[in-house]
Structures are given as C-alpha cells and as structure tokens.
Image 1 (cartoon, helix red, strand yellow):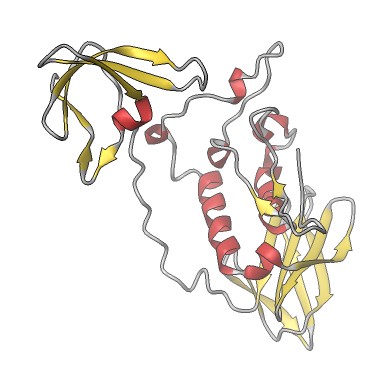
Image 2: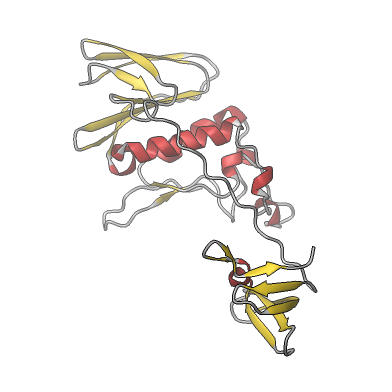
Length: 265
C-alpha cells in the first residue's frame, strides 16, 4: 500500500490503500471500524488521494491461489448502495478535500502522536486544518494550541471548544475529526448527485440503426490482436459489407442520442 507526498522534483505522489495488484483494504483490516479512519488519512496526508473503484462502497477482495480476479470484480453501479455509511463518508471527504486547499497541497506539521492516536496540521497561505484520529477502543481527549478563536469539526459539523488559544476535543472510540475555522462544507447545500448511467449491453445477431440512417446486424465481438481492445464486427443490411469498429465507439453517444440504436426488442 502506498502513502506518498510531494517529491522534491515537484512531481505528485498518489496516496492509495488498495489497487488492482493488492488485496482490497476492506479484506485486510482486522478491525472494520478502522475503514473510515484509513480513508481520512488517505485524504489528508501529503499526496493526491486515489480511490480504487469499488472501495467507495467498501467491497472486499482477496487473492485466491495467486488469482487476482477476486480483487477486480465487474460492478453494476446501479446495484451499489449510495446510502451506505462508507459511501457517504467518502463523498463527504471528497467535498472537504476540494473545499480546503491546505489539505491538497499544504505543508504537514505533526502536533502529537501516540500508539493509537494522531494529531497533525496541514497549512497553506494562512489556512490551517487540523486532523485528529483515535484508533483505540476507548475514548480519548486532546488539548492543543491554535491561533483560531473557534473551530468546527467539518466531518460532523459540531463546534469545538477553544479557550484562550487552547482547543479541547473529546474523541469517541474509532473516530476522526477534521477541524477548520470556517465550515464552508456544511454551510453549503448538498450537491445534487448525478445519476450513474448503466452501461449498455451489446446484442449479437440483432439489428442496429446508425444515427445517420443505415441499418446493420451485429455479428459479434472480436479482440484486437495488438491492443486487446474489444471490436464490434457488424454487417450492412443494405449491401452486406462487413465493418469493424471499437466497441466503446459503437456503444457511445453522439449528441443527445446513441451512435447505434438497437432496433430489436
């Protein structure tokens, strides 16, 4: 698993906790209560946050006898639970990550660390964001200095006690906080979710009409020998000529409609 940051040569490093070559983090964690906290670190430590598809839903996947395919399942997004706590947590983290530049490119300053707790700050151009995690099964209290007169946990929207430059936070077991001075995330209207379009299915042996008017019969799908790209093989119903084009192009849209529209039910 990789945790990165900004390299001295200016190139960006990506943070990730799972990818196509390693077992999914949901399968690796012995304590599932840590799943949310792992992703808080992913979005707040130096580096560019990277989510492997499906991990936003907390799906599992482990190698089986050296076979990587269980880690790379085909997902039907229409079946994924958009109300799951893990999904909503990552959506919230994405909004926070976008709202506060200090989280994306700010400098890292460690404030305190124990075996099971971590408190650090990300700072950029006068903006300071504090990140606190309690990975223990018991509650924990932090006291730390801040130049702000007030703080808010942007994850929960709850205000934090600040008295004469001293902030006090009480953390429940297996919890995290992202503390900011100006809660611009919870003060904004929740963005309207864009519906996910379910991928179209290709029907071999069926008739399709091209958006310019021609009618064709799909003969099958072939694999390009050099690129391994899926290619649709289809025949003109008018003159019998056989054509081939990339499946992605065959199935895509042109303007408000599809390039090829299925005629047969």
